[in-house]
Amino acid sequence: MGDEEARSASPPGPAHVRAIEEAVLARWQPRVRARRRARAEAEGFVFYTRARFGFAAPAGSSDDPRVRWITQDLPGEVARELFAARDAGAGEQQQTVILARAPGHAYFRDWGRRAHGLHIVFSDVEFADFSIA
Image (cartoon, rainbow, N blue to C red; front, side):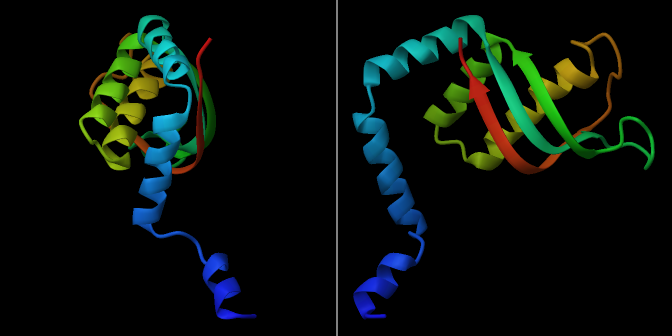
């Protein structure tokens, strides 16, 4: 294998990945993105994930953190918070905190009707996807 082939087989570094993301965002249908963002902020979105999710609870309890499939409708305020964080330069860690809080409030706390004050665990994310109507 020549030097040229070896270089193209290695994964891109963080700077290269950022440059690719910026180029895609700059060119990918800005009006479509703006309409989708406005719709998500107004109407909410569906969040799909497979991750370790639960309360910091005793092992074996029904709320013990474990890998779960979660599909949850989330309100527009969560979309606004996520977009605002991204626009402000928030990293993946900060956005994950927002995503842990939102489905935790909906899924475990039943929109504030139970389980007040318990710490939600959201880690080991295998995938996360979003759907906007």
